[in-house]
Structure formats: structure tokens, C-alpha cells
Amino acid sequence: MGRPAIPMTLPFRLSVRPRLFAALVGLVALPASLGAATENALPAPVITSMREDLLRMNEFFDTTLPGTLKRYNIVLEFTPKFVDFRDHEYIRFPIEIRYGVREHWELYGGLTPFIPNPFNSGNDHRWGPGFALLGFRHDVGSFFGLYDQVTIGLETRAPLGQPPLFLIDRYSHIRPFIAAARKLPWPNTTFLTSYSYDRAVDTPGRGTPPAKLPRVHILEIAPSLLYKPGEFGGFAEYTYRHFQEEVQNRLGHEYKVGSVWDVPLVRSQAWRLPGKWQVELAYKITDEQGVGRSRGIAMSVRWRTSLREMLYYKPGYPIPSK
Image (cartoon, rainbow, N blue to C red; front, top):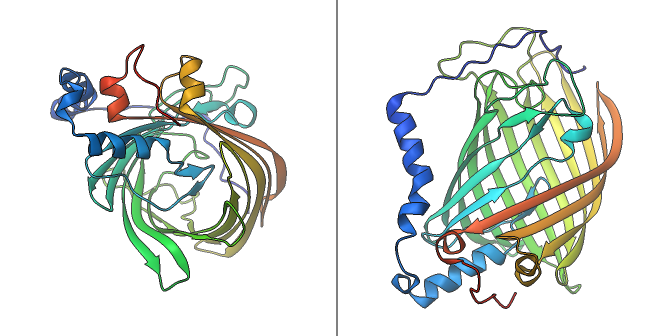
């Protein structure tokens, strides 16, 4: 079964209540207001934990590594989707804020806005807020000797306005997930497994989507190997997907082999680039029943910064050791 047809006209309208707008403005202005504090206000252990959260790689492509932020730490992540220049009429710019509520508990949320692609045109050559994301993670530790570290979580995505159907359908999505890791006897090699179930539900206040838009629930299992001896690493991943629709079920398979460049802070700061950078490159094959097979090169660039970097970094600030 192919993807649903996209209407010729998609109206876009987004209204924001004054109280909600004030809250958003306050959230954006929070780092600036905190910037008046001095670095001496934070004890050395807190500074160290903030730096560790910034340096630790927490995901590559669609694979999330287990683990949560330290208590009270805040990390901002920005992941532009450069593959959209080739594949879509729009370009996504996901932005996410993560907050360590307490030890082993993390709250996160974000938006995935999109803008017109200057190289492609069509019905989705437009801009909009995309969808909103809200979720939490909890680090539960080891699991009966099978995994060294396990993180469970729950997230929800809700469309804003009328985003492209490929970006998100007219349904909201509730997704429980498990991220697990186990160190292997081989040097610098980790076995990772992700389990998730994405359930599509009606979005409150938006009404029921048209009948031609099928409600699809997706079960996903993704084992992978990550080899990372230093700033450069490699990975191999297989993803199994089970699509459950109202009229039929179908399967999907995806294979990725690629590399990761975890850019050291010393190098990025020498280039006068703020924050922590990560570059990923992979060859991907996707095979989905009813859609067919596709293959190609995928690239991802991630940028993240911590509360410490936002508040205290300035030219001439001592460069961390990593």
C-alpha cells in the first residue's frame, strides 16, 4: 500500500493564546536572565557533570543510546535534516531541550519546524511549525545480566497546523520505548537494541482525520553494533518494522552501515564553533511492503550545548580537555 495522496491545498493556521505566548517568551528568555549569575554560583561537581553530559554521545541517526542527564542539567540539541534537500519539498530543523529532573529521570520536549526547499517545488514547498514533541526517560540500570544499561521512556508527538503528511500524519502519536546497551568483549564495541511501539491516536481539538488517511501503528525492533575507539567510530544497524493498519498488516526492513565523527570540543572551539558537534554518514537500504525498496546515502549533523556553555562560555574561556 503506497503513501496517502497529498491534497492540492493545505491551509495553515496557528493560533497561540496570550498566556501560552508569554510562557514561551519566558522560556526563551530564561538563559539570558540566568546569565547574570557568576560561575562561582555552581559547585565544581555540578560543572563537571554538565561537561560530561555535553561530551557524551547520546544518539546517532534514529538510534538513542541509554542514559539520562544529570540532575538539573539542561541540554539544547539542534539536528537539521540535510537529506531533505534531496528527498522533499521542505527542510526540517528539529530542535529539542532536555532537562535532568532528578537523578536517572529526564524530561524533554521540542519542535520540528520546516521551511521551503530552495531546490524542490510542489504542494509541500512551504513553511510551518511541524509537530511538537514531549517525553521523559528513566534510567533503570542493568537488566538481569543481559544488558549493562537500560533506559525506558514515553514520548508523544502532535501535529501543529497542517504539516506535510510525510513529516507527520494528522494523528498524534504515543510511543513507549526501551533503549538498551551491552559492552562486548571486543574493544570499544557496544551492542545496542531499541524497542518501541508507535500508536496513532486522534489529536484532541482537531477532529478525526479523513478516512483516506489510514491509522498506522508501528512496532519497531532495532539491534545495532557501535564501534567507537575515539572521536571516530562506525556502526551497523538493522531495523525491523511491523505496520498495523485497519485493513492489513505489512512489514518493513532497514539496513544502515556508516560512520560517526564525534568532533572534540578542542577542535570545534579552535574553529570558533560553539557547542558540541557530531557528524554521521551512512549507506541505507529500506524495504517496505507496498512501497518498495530504496537505497542511498544519508547524512546527519547534530549540534548541542549545555546550560553551562550558554551561561559561562566566552572568548578566552579555558578549553576542556576533550
